[in-house]
Amino acid sequence: MHFNYHFLKFLIPALENKFVGKEILECFSQNKDELVIGCSGQDEEAYIRANLLPSVSCLAFPDGFKRSKKNTISLFPELIGKKITAIDLIKFERAFLIKLSDGNLLLFKLHGTRSNIIYYHSGSKLPDLLFRNELRDDKEIQIEDLAKVLTLDYETFRSLEGNASKFLPTLGKIPREWLKNNGYPDVGIEGKWQLMTSLLDMLDSPLYHIIRKGNEYLLSLLPSQDSLFQTEDPIIACDELFRYRVVIQSFEKEKNHWLKQLEDQKKRTAAYILKTKQKLEALENEISPSQTADIIMANLHQIEKGQEEIELLNFYSGKQELFKLKREQSPQKYAENLYRKSKNRKKETEQLFLNLIEKEKLLEQTTSWIEEIKRYSDFRSLRDFIKRNHLTPKSKEQEEQIPYKRFEIEGFEILVGKSAKANDELLRNFAWKEDLWLHAKDVSGSHVLVKHRSGINFPKTVIERAAELAAYYSKNKNDSLAPVIYTPSKYVRKIKGSAPGAVMVDKESVLMVPPKGP
Image 1 (cartoon, one colour):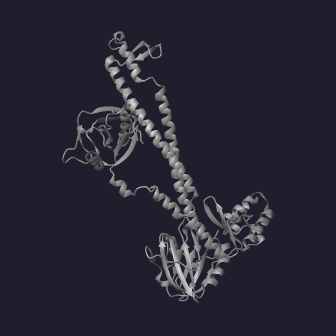
Image 2: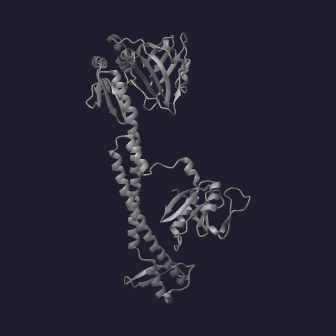
């Protein structure tokens, strides 16, 4: 409401007292969509600071302003050395006019997200310069067309059937909400008129409140029980609102950004911990593959070739149980695979425990960070904290230096190439001969590496998940099932002169998987 006509009619006389007779000494910008005009006269300085960013448009009129030595540019050189002779309010419009000693004019058009400062040469109907050049329609604004004539009597009100927007278009959001909350839509014409006159009386009272609506700070001429600040001086009201909107609101936005990021991380970490605990519990309750292998080896004489299942005594539980076999494998080979699987499961369980400890530490740290950020009330403390804890994400340039995306599955590091050239770099500089290499079959896509861990075979679940990623980062992304080839990296080689990402592959195996992203 600080750009509302009903506030401007109090602000403009105060600005005339402060600025008329002063000479403009400088006009510059050092932030996007912010213009600062510095004036001096009778040994007094006064500044107009107009922040016209669509998200936080507001004005301030400080007695001093220290211009930065860097990132600053002088603007509107035509203003320098001119005196301000008058400041006029434009009738029933969100705009005012600064008149200069050479007859030139500076229009402050305060239309919310489309606010602008427009310069007119003396006698010129159309603008000569715009502060925000992207608002091209402003080049057609003629000052004489801006003022409106409104008749605010009962007869006009009645002829408009009590339509508040037509009767007084300058009301703004807060007064309209006041009317609605006081039952304006539901009463007759007499009741509407009574509410309208009460509202106009309040709008004619020079008492200004700063209130908060959601995440935004607003200026109101209406009484409020939740007023954060109040004053009878319109310039002080502008200066204080500028502080709330530009400093405090911006700080809260940045603070809430970091809180949301950490809350999301906390949520993800808690979900991982729960899932890992459930997986460990399931592994502990399952029959160990080595026990099944023991039972099969003890009963080899009972198993016929090609048999797919057999009922045997489980000497661990003392019960007769049905055991599944693989037709294409001998019982001895099947038992050997079960022993290997049991060994890998033990290593997998150990890795899951290590992951669980790390994630529990991360959860504790993230919770601590959230509580610490909540206590901060200024930019310096918040940014020191972010820098100290290395929370700032890497720049795009730094990210592009790494040719792969990195994932972790059951303790195994998975690297996925970002592009054809990155695939070559991944294979050349980051692949070891025992790493597992995967790629979608017969289509272009990312190279995927599962990094080898000494003494540990690649679990089937890890290979399948890496294959899903290889299918997802390929042209088969939208298929229900996609073939993926895999082989140790030592069987993948780059042919000299071949296209980026193209390789020769030997001894590959094929796996059918559904494409799944991270």
